[in-house]
Length: 188
Image (tube, rainbow, N blue to C red; front, side, top):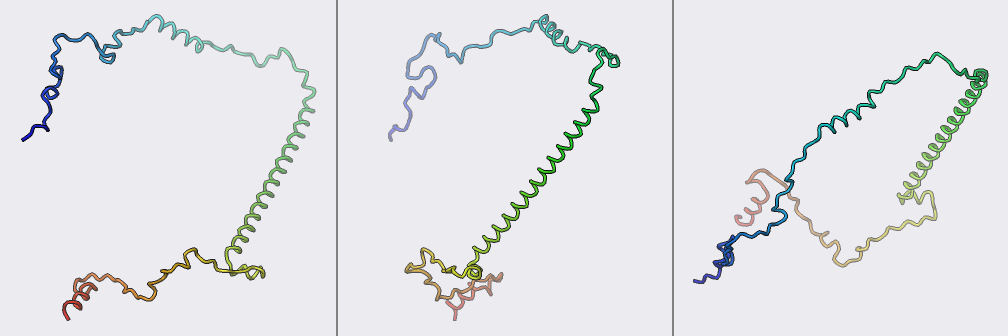
């Protein structure tokens, strides 16, 4: 019997002795992935942390000054024109309402036109789809039944003459069709 299927001795031993060459001294070479990393710890400086928190909190500690709202240092001279401003504002609001109404009317008109166009196109599509109705409306319409691409093949519809027996399922082993055919064939 041959031993060709067995591994050789040196790879079978494996490890550092592979190939029969024993390494007597360990190598000083090391992979970058095998070397230690992150060897120093980072300590946070508490003094800097406290200073940073104090600076961040300064904006929140500011108290807004109280404003005296009832004193008028500079009375506005525009009090005399308030009636004119109200009239202008009323005119602008009336103009705005008129523009809104016009836009609504235009949108409603456009929606009605789209709906009627969709209905008429649907009606035309239905009429065109039915060849019997086309003849009523269009006397020049020439109705022809289109032939399929495989209508003129030689072996088409050969099974029309043969009547296939309808398969029926009867859940009784003695009265089902298979058993009856078996009896007719082998026992007469």
